[in-house]
Length: 52
Image 1 (tube, rainbow, N blue to C red):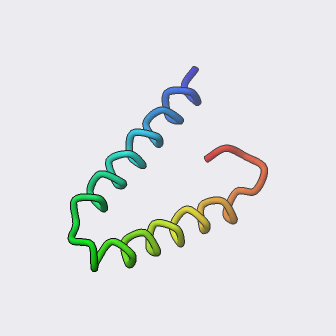
Image 2 (cartoon, rainbow, N blue to C red):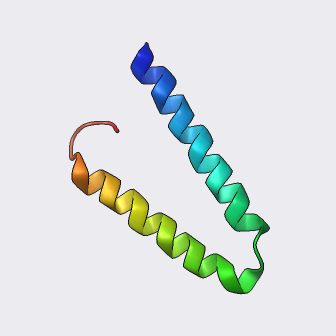
């Protein structure tokens, strides 16, 4: 059950991050989404096949 709780926290963190990005002016959102994409891609590459 600890894993599920951590998983829910990650979803909350992602949603918070998306809310922050959406609150930014339009011309800065693309860079913020690009950074988020890079961060998520690195997390996936760091632990293939296992939930992080």
